Length: 480
Image 1 (spheres, rainbow, N blue to C red):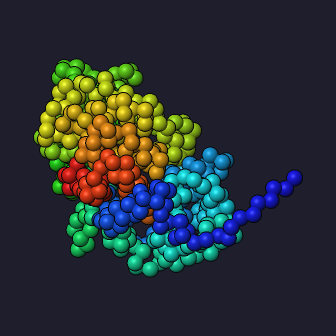
Image 2 (image 1 turned 60 degrees about the horizontal axis):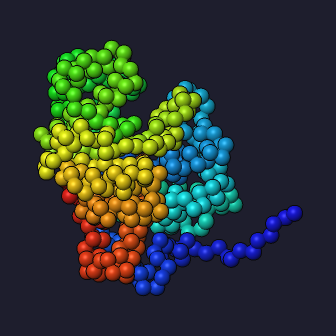
Image 3 (image 1 turned 90 degrees about the horizontal axis):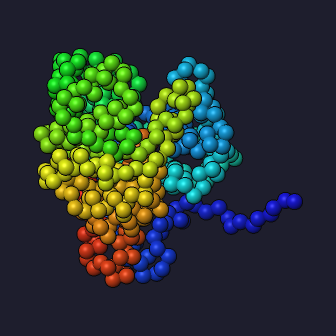
């Protein structure tokens, strides 16, 4: 039996862009529109992300549509892989030297043939927004127009107005932070700083390779860490001083934050002798799993203490079982879409750190989560009382309209708005940055409109809060 469906004509995507994500009821919908119009053109503050600083240093044209939209974006290729499409066929580079497709047009055709897989996902919204708003492609991508779309975007990429710096300016980005390992020489940031371009691209200090005994190559990383800083990293004090040295180096390239992607939120406040013993075990590669977790936890407290010295904001991103597939990790390396959320405890896990520094008013610690069950039970009550804590926005798997709504609904009643930090896009996909911020602005305006129309917020206050959530809170929280 053949299923026959009558569908309406395909319309331009712009027809459903205008009021998307706003309430259906007339009064809050109109107010959401008005709030959105008041803040939609504010500059983008992107305080945490993973774009490549080399783009802005060299300002060369992006290679082609596939290299821009598919190959570097795990949001895209993980969905395709889930339907049996090999990562190699999508051009994802391999660590093991195996074959990878190099014909970008073939990669794009696979993407277009399977574009229906993204229906209803935030990735679909980001892609549609980028295709139409950035590149002027207003048709729905599908197999029949794959080559036409590819050629249209490829032609755009050849023009100077589509180079990285021009797009940065066009996207109205005020500041954009990338994230680098402490072993990075920051040469691209130096090139940006030494250029005549006035775009503000800064770095952030991500010390995971030298604080996680389970990180591949940990011992070699520590050796290089010592070479870079001139510190004796075979000693505990030399190791801590190496962190202080690199943090200052990162600050010289604009860093205002550190970032920590630990498996859990566990913290410890060990004695010097206990920490030193664990460190020497880590150097010898003989830590048990429990000892490695203790060491990571203690290093979060040490990083918080250093933040009191140098005023870098501390970001904690726990709760991801990273690189869940050993086969994909071996073949393709880290960060290839196989990071899976896990349940996270915050109340007991953070207590050692909070006992040590949680009442410090000059300290800024931003908590993220992949475990939404902790929003109202743990995170909002903690941020609603500890001066050092702020809540990061809905993140990663919850970087979606529904995830953003749930975040506001479950945290505002206890933490308010000012104990949150606005929005950050946390992406490698450069052209999705304005799309992601637009979604966040729409969702926040819709939420505020409902608060006003249900008598919980005055209308003039809603305009102030919309400005805060879009712009002011991120600048303040990240000390930008």
